[in-house]
Length: 199
Image 1 (cartoon, rainbow, N blue to C red):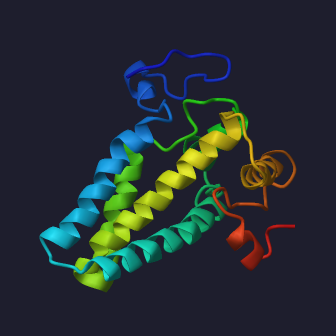
Image 2 (image 1 turned 120 degrees about the vertical axis):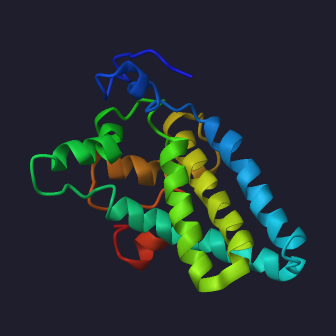
């Protein structure tokens, strides 16, 4: 699915085919990841005979761990500009384009291919640590990722209502316009308080 270039969404790549994959509508996130969450949780319970309550606990733990991953990836990797001639370009492709074109609704959620690479890495890491419990744990973690991407899209492009989302929108817009070195949380401000990057 390809979307045309606009002033708010200029091309990132000279190759039109490659550039098309850099544009992702918001609904691709639940379309791709809801089945993964359901399948991962169901596989743990049906194929591996994991009990329901511990599985729910593992999913809750995964959701909580995601909130830290969200904060830490945003604070470190997304705002990292490597030294060298390729550094600025790397940063622009990874996250700089979002700061440069804040109203680009097609480059706001993570492309599924990039998210799949990260998810596969996390599955491998957590499997080494927890074995079969990785399946409900990663179901929770991926659900947290979906909440993050949907919240991110909503605070940028939604008709935000309710005190919680208004607070998140103000927090995130502050990151964009005033405090790029602070306010890294998107779906929660918890870790900004813990690591003193909130104020």
